[in-house]
Image (cartoon, rainbow, N blue to C red):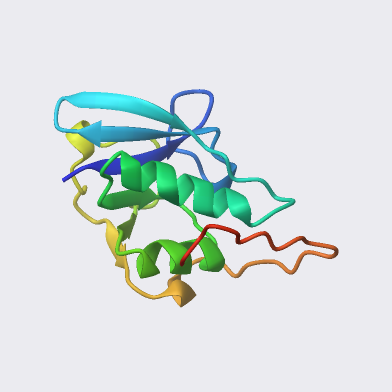
Length: 128
């Protein structure tokens, strides 16, 4: 199992998946970092991040909060997504799913996505 966790600049689990500057990819004892290319001005960042996670072999995501559109895209790609227990800000050991984590199985379990005025939809190269 290879798990990704969104991290903030203080080394804690980010409160919002899309705003995290990077993802920590945990594979047993190994940890590596992937920069988060998501950008509020275009949808393509989700595709770029999904591609990076797939290349890293990520199968599970641990999040505190995630938007519905992003959650839906990752679920359609076959990733297993879990919401960390309330108040948990330290990364789980070795990428294990912590006790009390909630499996997110439908996009509606994410935070409602806010409509964006003048938002560009750039899905080129993203099949999900």
